[in-house]
Image (cartoon, rainbow, N blue to C red; front, side):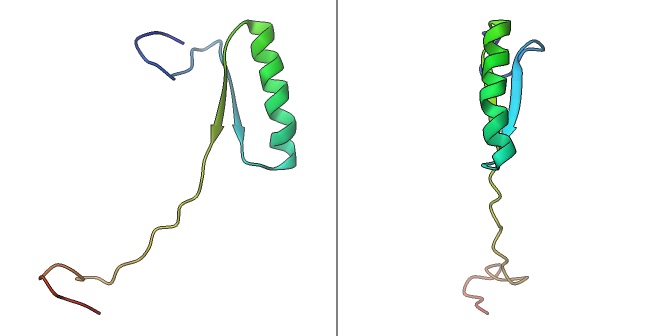
Length: 67
């Protein structure tokens, strides 16, 4: 990683996405081994789905509006 952009992978780094699936549990150690062979840090990326709550249109636009 370059010192001017912490956390950003370099082209020679190894990046793998993990999601808790069986294939991800297999991919993570393989990525770590490949990163070790390259003498580069592995980057494990995880995305969590966060549902957005819906709010009625206009709610809160005129103090005290409640559904």
